[in-house]
Length: 272
Ligand SMILES: NC(=O)c1ccc[n+]([C@@H]2O[C@H](COP(=O)([O-])OP(=O)(O)OC[C@H]3O[C@@H](n4cnc5c(N)ncnc54)[C@H](O)[C@@H]3O)[C@@H](O)[C@H]2O)c1
Image 1 (spheres, rainbow, N blue to C red):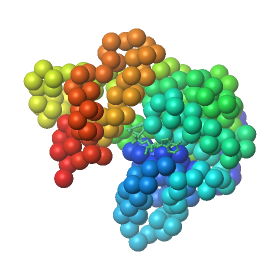
Image 2: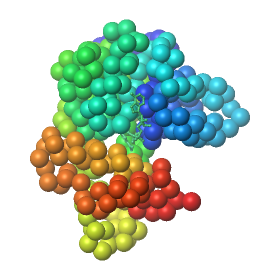
Image 3: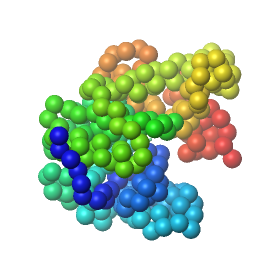
């Protein structure tokens, strides 16, 4: 098996819920990160949250935020955590490939899109590997390979997950992998119950107290972000035709209303 020994330096594309969260854990573990996003406000928010978590410790000096991928050109690995859409991901891969040499592992955080499809969009099939970080965070991370993924990319993804203090779980290739394929339809169904009059807190209380979920599905929806949830359900529905993945009208109404969850200060719950 390929082993990875050089010190990690990460460039993370996308400073939203996933990219910023990953950057926070990485710098805390002593890994230098360049966090890239075209959105200035999102970068400022991510930098402030990471600085707050780091306190006076050395971790804050390991983070650089920028609008340009080229600023992260000396990374040993690129993590793609951009919006769950073909357009956004294809553009991000093109930007990365203009900066990084072939052979630099590209880890995609996509929740729904199979690695083989992403590999085609990336133009670098051997470098493309999947790292699906669950939300709510847990100690395992799904690592997924496509048919053409190199051993080096898989070994790098495993090394990254271990360096973050987490446990890689290698799984097969399918839309939504395992986690999102099971979690997102559950959240969608829970949203449907709210549409039929249930209280979000009651739905979550049942799943917590009676079924042992540490975070209820609707609180998880707010953590994930209703926008990401709807985009991911759409991608799953397109690829599986499974009706349980067709976004509930409740989620579509929330999206329309800007009630995007924690990031917006309101979703199924209020955050202030
Ligand atoms: N939110 C979650 O809980 C969660 C969990 C696991 C995986 N994911 C996956 O992570 C990815 C990101 O999801 P998110 O919820 O963090 O999305 P988000 O909407 O919170 O953030 C996405 C960010 O990507 C940025 N972006 C778009 N194009 C870019 C580019 N070319 N270069 C750099 N940045 C770019 C956007 O400006 C935005 O700030 C998706 O593929 C999603 O499926 C999300």
